[in-house]
Length: 177
Image (cartoon, rainbow, N blue to C red; front, side, top):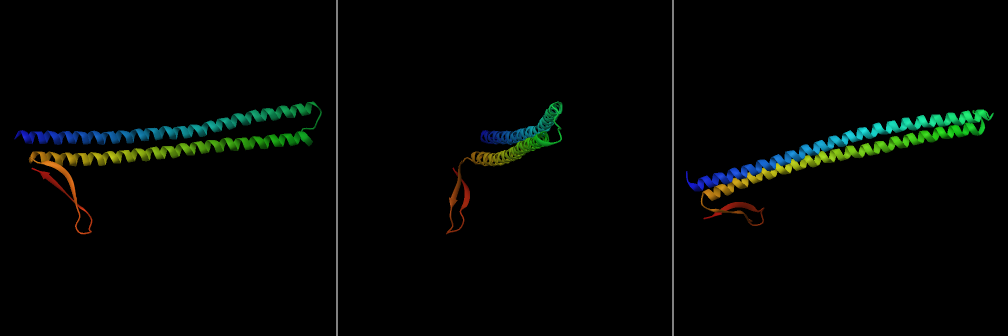
């Protein structure tokens, strides 16, 4: 085997290793994107759970506050089920229901945003992996062609574009001796 053949083989092997590294880098980016997406999904679930805990704590505080108002009005000799005390109690209950709905709505919006970010992150990882695959294949092909051209004693000049009378361009590889 000639020195030129050995050098061409080494050049092709180097090209193959670079292509493999590019492929692996794309796979790593994809795996990292999926891991980030999983974290975002966990954060979305945690956001919903925290909202439930906030609603529970607020409801507990509201019940105690209403009980204190009811006890205070009763101690003053006012019937808590009639007039202003009843109105204040109904308004307070209604306001707490609105607060609960807002807390739940805000948590759902935040969770939805996290789920959307997770999906976009996964899509970006898939795209990075596909781009790396394409780059790896083209690098391998280019390295193979360059190695072959070098082995044959020529220099690869790349694609040359020719047009054939208004038709689509055609490409051909040429070597310079």
